[in-house]
Length: 338
Image 1 (cartoon, rainbow, N blue to C red):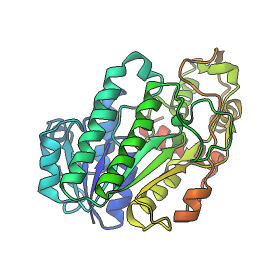
Image 2 (image 1 turned 135 degrees about the vertical axis):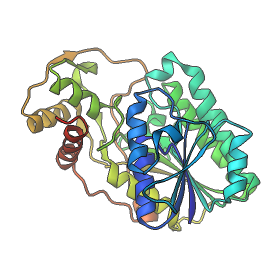
Image 3 (image 1 turned 30 degrees about the vertical axis):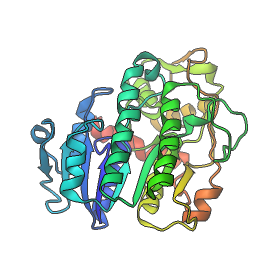
Image 4 (image 1 turned 60 degrees about the vertical axis):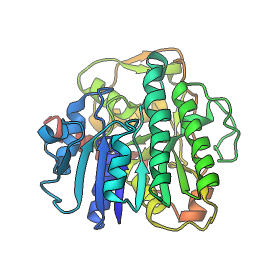
C-alpha cells in the first residue's frame, strides 16, 4: 500500500511510519516541523527514519530515506497549503491516508488560538478536499479524548454528548469529526476518527506529563502537580496506540458504515500521584512537588470505554503502566546520554 502519514515527525506519526515500513508498505511522511516544542526531537525522529535534517528543513522538498530507500519519502509542508497538498496527492495517488498532523496542546490553545484554526480546521479541510478530488477511499484521522470535556460519565463512550468542549483544541477536534461525517455522507469517503487517550512512550512529546515529570525529577526541579494531584489519566503506551491505528488503516471494520469514530486508549485510568510515584520508584529519586490549582482547559479525568474498537477491530492493549514507564525511561536515558 502507498500511505500518506501526516505529522510524520511527531510522536505517534514517527512510530506509525516505522511500523508501516516494517510491514512492507510505501510511506510518504509529511510534517511542517513547527516549533511548538524543540525541533531537535522532531529531526531526531526523522533521522531514525533515514531522513537527513538538511533535506527535511526545506519546505516542499521530497527527501528519500537513506535507510528505507524504496519505502520512505518525507516532505516538509503545511497541511493548509492549498497548492502543494493537492499536488502531492496528484503525484502519488495514495491508497490510504492517516492524518496525525495538528497543532497540539490543550493549554497552548488558550495562548495561541490562531494556530489551531490554521492547522486543525483549515488544514483538515484541505486534506478532506484532496481526498475527495483524488478518490481516496479511506482516511484515518486523530481526534482526542479532550472532546469529552469535563464529563463525569465515565468510562467515556463514543455515544456520549461532546457538545461542551472546554478548550479550543478540543473544539477543533470535535469540528474535525463533524467535517469528516459530512465528507463521508456527501462523497462516500470512509473516515475513521480515533480519540486518543494520553499517549506516552519512547520519543514522546516533551510537553506531556511523562516527559515533563522525568526531566524535572532527574534534574532536581519541582514538578507542577495541578489540581493538587486530584486528577487521573488513561495513560496508553505508544505500541498499543500504533497497533490500533494500523488496524483501522489496513483492516476492514465489522462496522460497514462509512463514518466511524472510536476511543483508543488503555481503559485503565491511573491517579496522577500514583503515576508520579511509579516514576519516582523507577528512578529511585523523590520528586519535589509544586501543588497547584486546576489549569484552565484541563479536565479532571479521562477513561476510555473500548467496547466499540474492540468489537470492530479486535483491539486490545498489552503494556501496563509500570512496563511502559520502564520502557520510556530506558529510551530517555539513552537519548540524553545519562
